[in-house]
Image 1 (cartoon, helix red, strand yellow):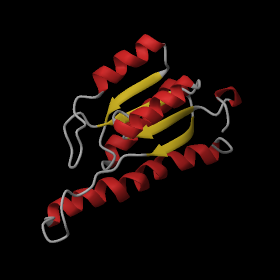
Image 2 (tube, helix red, strand yellow; image 1 turned 30 degrees about the horizontal axis):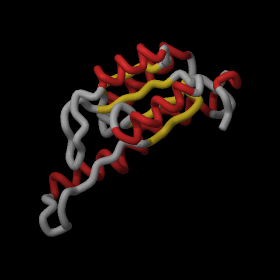
Image 3 (cartoon, one colour; image 1 turned 90 degrees about the vertical axis):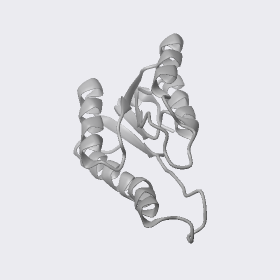
Image 4 (cartoon, helix red, strand yellow; image 1 turned 180 degrees about the horizontal axis):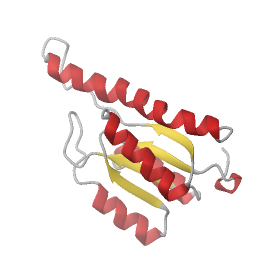
Length: 145
């Protein structure tokens, strides 16, 4: 893994405020990477994540970690654009993206209503598409990531 001294910019972590994403955020920051992590504060399907940003912010500040935390929906083009704008404003460039945000159904195909299926597809497929679509042009312009 490249190190932050390579001046590759910050790392954006979707779903980076809870669970595995939270651990990824903390690990990258502990290794010296500036991190922009985002997620939703309201409880989501098949997740216990709720109001995770304040406790993560306190932990990061206590440890002196360089983490920017944002509430944003990975399935919203406008929210993803806002995350990208915040990352570029704070750090000048984005050097890496971790597409971590995901949700899952709580039942079978028979008891999963179409609106729930649509939300799962929006987060799990549209989300990585939107974040990659936002980040890749900046990485390419900067010569890589």
